Image 1 (tube, rainbow, N blue to C red):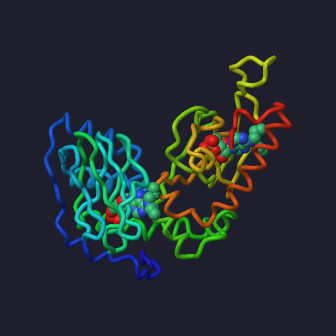
Image 2: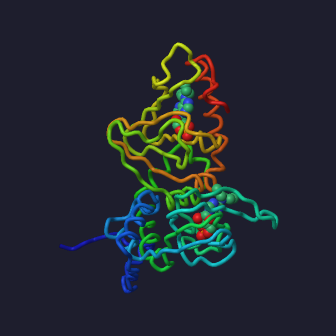
Image 3: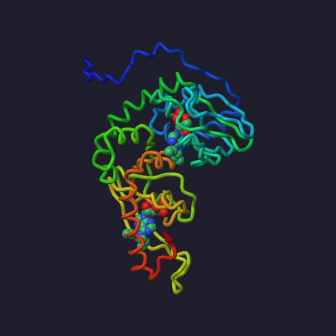
Length: 303
Ligand code: 1OR
Ligand code: 1OR
């Protein structure tokens, strides 16, 4: 059979010549590595085989308090996944270094310089002893950057019709595609638990989610009764409230039937969704009105 695949300039399939990097690991290291990588969004859209090549290539890095893992302005060498430890994020503003966030024992960083061939955009400093998994630039390019061309093809059309993201430039929307992960849920799965610390933002791609609230302020209602307050379907978003307000999750969110969501982490949310903030804040003020209408108070949702 003749395979007539369309020509794609992003797809440089000819760099298969690059050697595969393998850093041998003990069983114990492999277990920790698997655990650290299971929720890394950039790995979520890889094929099984590519993912296992990524794991093979990763190497363990021990860090001490005050170690600078990355310095803003440097060239990119590695991408890092956190095994353990707390890491502060500093960004220089007018020559002054400001702490703009932190990673707490999970997550990953250092993808931007490798993806876009730019200087490091932030400084990352360990605040305590910790362990990281590094992935070298060449392997990151061969597997992750290559996979991004496929992601753009898969998600460009969908992202174009997410109303919230209309306020962004096309290039900004594509940067969201570059860092997003995909998660699928079965009917009834809890995606967000009220009261939890927030790490991600979600957009429904297929299926539906329902949003339930337990109120603490309604006296004649048992504390453990959840009330459905809203649903979201294709193109709609949820999980922004806790990120915008820097508060625990205000509601629980469950999948209704099989559901697929696009997911971005809090750092990417803050970095890329600034221009959409007004729209999100306007919608949040409507939650408050609804809460008063439903429960007679908005104390659960102090904005
Ligand atoms: P990198 O390769 O540029 C620094 O090296 C890494 O810090 C970067 O990749 C990201 O993985 C991570 N702006 C830019 N980079 C950030 C940010 C960030 N946060 C984490 N990184 N902002 C802070 C968002 C909480 C925006 C600041 C204006
Ligand atoms: P989050 O990060 O707090 C739960 O995690 C998410 O549910 C929340 O962000 C919103 O994205 C979403 N009140 C609170 N959260 C809501 C509401 C809501 N609707 C959706 N979410 N209300 C419903 C308004 C129609 C007000 C409660 C009656």
